[in-house]
Length: 454
Ligand code: NDP
Image (cartoon, rainbow, N blue to C red; front, side, top):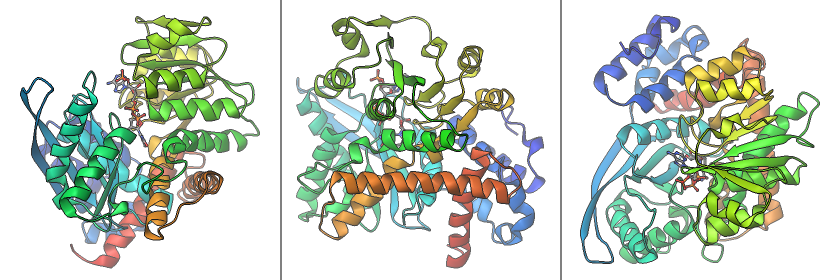
């Protein structure tokens, strides 16, 4: 059905699920890519779990429980009125309240939100915490907007979203373009409209009003904890490794920080305007100041750091490294990038972003025997710590940083073990992609079987 995806490699039962999905929504390329990647690892379940087919679990799990699209009108500082489109896709709530981030980026559309929501179902399942899967956002570009404009946009967005969410219903968080500032404005508007301090309605909150220590660091730290386990399983470590991290946002900054704490040297980071090489190792304090405080560009970092050089041409993947951590956005690492990495001797690619590596590039990594961690396992630390924030909100308490970070570490070690054990059980030892997909899927599917036809 879809020319881009070779359904002949799927069993007939799964191929027909995919063909129907493509026929129903033919223009949702990112969503097709995410579903195909999962389905292509589920072949063993067709025989081993006949009840999944009898109860149409495959058909049901690829269709969101609810998809919301809404108008977000707001006025800029000059009084001009703009209209954006808001989204919330509540994909699956078999394991708990819907949970997943909000993305504000001009590229946002229903396909992107559905791919992210679909991935989120299995990622949340892997954390072991009771969370369903969802994702949302808007095609709004926060770049260059004043704080007042961001606030008005967030208020308008939440004026509609608030009727669809709640601590036991759906708990959004941040993603690209949505950080602590935006969560603050969103929470303020929710509280004002609902006249209720429901701390558990959003995660990623400020530390004085219901936030969790280590949430800001969680995705990047969790990624490095997961990658550390992969290295450890082979008797290796981050000590002395040369690392390249794409992006310079929330995930990239804290992946850089943790990798360097573990003895690696991060020699390159990027943003959408280019990349920086810093042979002395990235100065994380300066990077945080440029990106988090001043909301600047990586070129500003290079301008202030004598050992750093900014490149607006070329690709960050041409920078030689032992470990590559794609932490920017979907499909940022294609075949050419992977070929350059392999040519320069890369040993491991671990995803901080969601679906950053294209299917052809993943095939090439496997062919070359490069260790590869799929994002739904390796970047699950963010949502796991959001789950810990929800636990703290329910108990009206706040755990110290060290305690929360230790729980995050333990969860990442657990996900790594679960991926490997599941891959072993299904006859694909060492395959992190199959291990993550199968482990995440089975838990959700079994809950759907138990809960009947809904
Ligand atoms: P941020 O908005 O903090 O940072 C995003 C970074 O990626 C920026 O450096 C940005 O550059 C770059 N980027 C974004 N879009 C593009 C693009 N189209 N081309 C090139 N560069 C781009 O987002 P996060 O760090 O929170 O998210 C990064 C990735 O991690 C996303 O895939 C997200 O879904 C995933 N993720 C995030 C989690 C979290 O807890 N935040 C949890 C799990 C996954 P620029 O500023 O120039 O746009």
